[in-house]
Every structure is written in structure tokens, then in C-alpha cells.
Length: 135
Image (cartoon, rainbow, N blue to C red; front, side, top):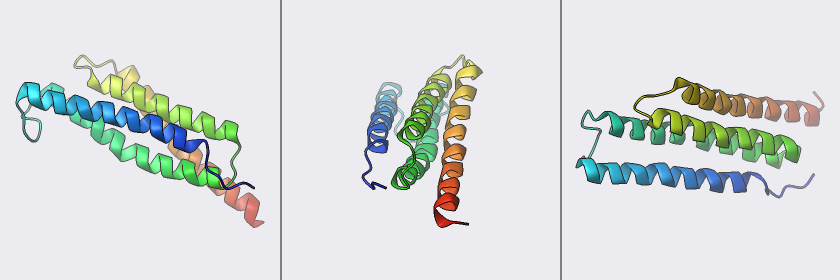
């Protein structure tokens, strides 16, 4: 089993770029709306902050789990599938929550893909452990 991590870092980089984009959006909104801290009860600012916060809440844990799965030797196709699900989930969620006239299908689909990645990666880690430990 090779222990070189080669797949997950690419998705981490793509997700990092998305995080940068949503963060820059907040900086621009703060300037244009003249909001130094908090959301000043502005719905657009609040939505932008929630996009960034929600991203920061889920992505790091998912990437750690995916990295562990790659270290365990999980099949590349599974790693790509899970990582693409996370990437698409975060894009859909960010788009959905960013809209003031929100179409909940984007938000719900984004969270469903994110939760699928999270739980499926956990299941993969446990399966790999049980398979490799002889239990």
C-alpha cells in the first residue's frame, strides 16, 4: 500500500480557492456596505458570512477524513467520487445561500452532498480499519 497522498491535496487546493473567493466577497461587501464587524442586520452581509462560516465548519473535517482515507489506501475512484461530491456540495450550498431570493434546492442539495461525503468517508475509514485489522 502506497502512502503518498496525491488525490486529496488537489481537491483541497480547489476548495481553498473557493474559500478565498467567498472570503474576498465578504471583504468587498464590508467596504461597500461600510460594515466593520458583524453583519449590521444586513441580509446580504449575513448570507455572505454564513456561506463562509458554513464552509469553514465542514470542509476542514471532510478534508482530514479524506486524507486519512487516502493514507489507508482507499481506491482512487472512491476518493475522487467523495471529493467531487464535497466540491460540488460546497459550490451548490454557497450559491444557494448567497441568493437573497433563495432557491432551497441549491442549499439542500449542497448540504446533502456534503453530508454524504462526510458520512461516506467515515464509513470508508471504519471499513478499511476492519478489513485491515482482521476483526
